[in-house]
Each structure stands twice: as structure tokens, then as C-alpha cells.
Length: 83
Image (cartoon, rainbow, N blue to C red; front, side, top):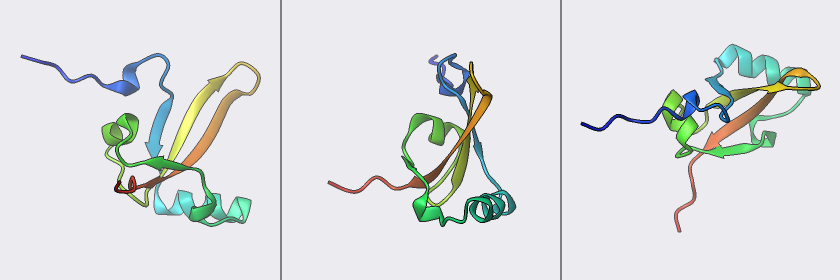
């Protein structure tokens, strides 16, 4: 019997969370941007797959920072282009 590896449990992988529509709206308003201006992450990224995010979702990535204490980054989930 094989067990699946949960990449989010690895010490080097920061916390990934799918943001609600309200949270995304607040984020875009706060920075006066559109979702297309956010950095991108592919839908088949192991962490994205683990949390169940799909294309067009926005995810929050929370890292521990030695200088800031806590650092948040945001990514728009996109489909990987076909070759």
C-alpha cells in the first residue's frame, strides 16, 4: 500500500490557501490591480493540487520571515499552456 505525500507538510513549503471572492476583491481594491496583474502559478503545481485550487482561483501563500515575521504573497492559478 502506498501513501500519498502531502507537500504542504514539508518544512520548506509555505502555507497555501484558496482565497474567497470577498478576500480577492479586497486585495484587488487595496492594491488597485486586476487579477491578471498578479503573479501566476500553474494549476498542476503540487501545492495547488493539494489544496484543490483550480484555474482562476487566487491563492495566498504565507511564509515565515526572519525580518517581517510573516510574509504573504498572492498568485493567480492558471492552466499550463499546451506544447
